Length: 439
Image (cartoon, rainbow, N blue to C red; front, side):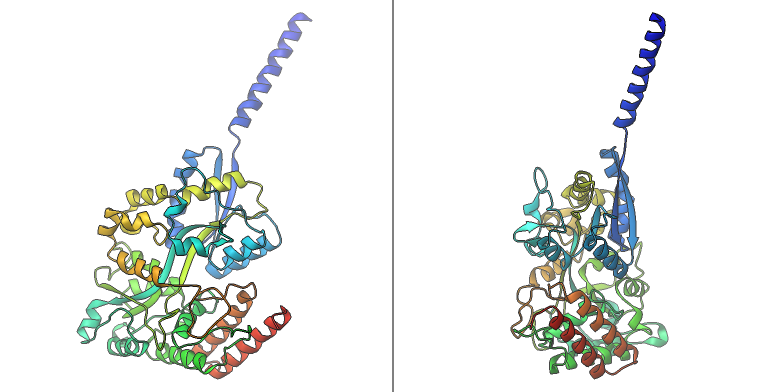
């Protein structure tokens, strides 16, 4: 009996030890939803470095096309489903969802240098001075052009050229017989796709989404001029099938040497100047975005950022990952691993002060200038009641912008006229605003 008791105790001790050991090495898996662009793909490749430093945490990635990502994370957070522990969201969602209590406040304590984040980017991701999403990269929009083609055509491109001049340059370098198109612009429907660019064009033509009483203004003369100009220019000097192209499609065209100009996110500069990706990496020039009658809102402001939904069951682990992925240390890791021209930009002052980055990134000055010139609080020539350059930061805008994007894309593909497109978009917007009780 005595011997049996000892054996039993021994087994019990062993089982307890095994359970203790198993518990010590138990892993928590966090699920991160993100967009399928280059910087995010690179973050996935570097994730083992995070897991190595945090052996109790495994990261599962869900990578989606931009429009699908927006739809999925919106449904998840609104329904409190808890499918994702970390979400890639932007400046539109962060303040609205923060106000609604759908996001957890980002932990900026300790060695997380929150004051190093560019003020405009930090402000755009905050509500009531509280940061609800940490920026992974920030961007404005600017002109990226082929210096060799523009020079050969006897033309010039300067900061803040007029849209009329940009169209003239597009016409001069347009050479479809040799596979070169004068200008590549977003045409794919979506409030964050074609309407991001279209809104900056419209702003510069003096348009606005809403008047001071929140009445939609899409049938205004300014919107008609802006959309007509865009459709005419892209139809004459853009690549075939432009109504299906957004950021990734135009990036591929530019890197293949098929675009004379491309006006899009500043974050693309690191890709088009990368010899591993771009056939024209040493022929690219940069300039500030063009305008028509007003420079207000002529270039957008955006940040892809990491937010933590309130419904997550792994908030501690999620906070650790977000702090790692958006830190100065992560930027240094990318610089050492892939070179300083490849680091995610547009977020931290220290990046632009880094001598290695300044030397490697020929686009650094133009990018920072564009980001600093965008003002979400004053982006239209006429008074407007909303915040945001390429969107209006109200919950109803996602549906309004999506419908408008479909209509404008329809006008570009030729299935309807510009007047019909704007009439339909305005009618839909009016219905949305009435239902929401704005008037």
